Amino acid sequence: MKVGNGKQKRLRLDLYIFIPAVLISIIGIFTLLSTTIGNDGKFNDLSIVYKQIGFVVFGLITYLVVSKIDISLFKYVQIIIPIYLITIILLVLVFILGPVINNVQRWLVVGGIQIQPSEIAKITVILVTASIFSFKHRYNQWLLFLISFIAVLPIFLLVYFEPAGSMSFLILFIWFLVAFTGLSNQLRNTVALIVVGLVSSSLFLISFTDNWIYILLSIAAIVISILAYYYRDNWRVLIVISFLIGIMVGSTSVVLYKNVLKEYQKDRIEAFLNPTENTKDIGFNVNQARIAIGSGQIWGKGFGNGTQSKRDFLPEHQTDFIFASYAEEFGLVGSLFLLVLFSVITIRVLNISIDNARNTFLSMILIGVTMKMVLEIFINIGTNLGVIPATGIPLPLVSAGGTITVMTLFSLGVVQSIINSSNVSKNNRNIIDNY
Image (cartoon, rainbow, N blue to C red; front, top):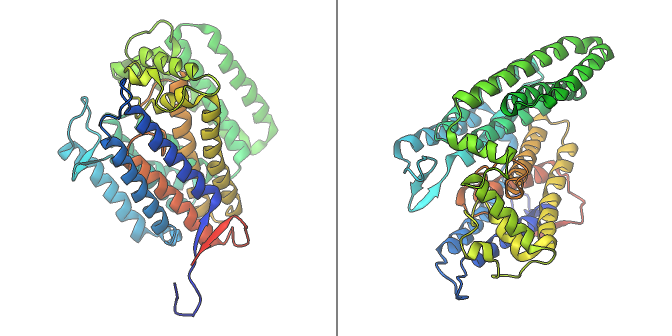
């Protein structure tokens, strides 16, 4: 396509991002197609497959459109504030107009299509946090950290009260990771974070299990704190504060568990800590997912031959537990192939973030997109394997769902835009130039 200066405008696609994303989307569609095969070997209702194909196509179009936008514009308040307010409005509308499905309100229905604003909120949190920290050269970084937290807090609360506890804490964790990377002196911050994590985990686990073996975590935190305290003089205040915060967070988590969390949320934690003693509901679901994954063995049972999903032993086999459906039919080899595709994308985005390290705004967005995808993958597959408490977090580009599919491809389009604008891959052989 010609432009005013006579040069041709090129559409650049990074192979390390675009091709794995397309392949993962195809895997998701074929897995969904397999789950529609009945015991008689015939396809049943294919509407979910057709919808997912439509979502993928729309998502890829979004990817291409966003890749042509100058993402640096999103750091300006004239643009980021409307995006933030629109996200808040959508989350509020969920409580007003959203249908109640399985006793929760998490969606808006537009033209027969369910839209989940909390998925949009993940991207908004990344953009807003990066935008706030783009002023780091003018304001104190801890002030910006506080401001970003205040900005994210309404989103967290609105999502939590849908209720969507897992999603709300995922959003909060994404914010923290993005904001954390915006702070200077990462070694000191990492040590402080480890101290907070060890102390708070120790207090929570001792309270929950009545097993004092977890006091070892606090002892480890004390040892690390002492070493860090004498390692650098300017670390001392933060290390002491971190230890106190760990005590506060641990104590607060105990109170929240006993007085705030709903019964189904407690059941998920109990099923995780005592999987063999909890065979109902959440514990049953996870056990069935593990059975499905294990039965796939090395090569899997083959397309359409998964018995756990066909006989409805595996719950939510098209969304939360779709990885178990896939692993049952394609085995360890297929599962590793899927993980390799995800790894290629995440490693590529991390490399691009390193190339853009001097640009706080762009590097934080890249870190945010990476952490968002890594957390979603880890939580979903971890739930299927029973290594973390069961949550309702879908697997990006694989689970059935329009909003997460489109927003995942949107976020990858943002990465592609950064690649194009920063000329990171200008001379890379792995770039397709389409005229």
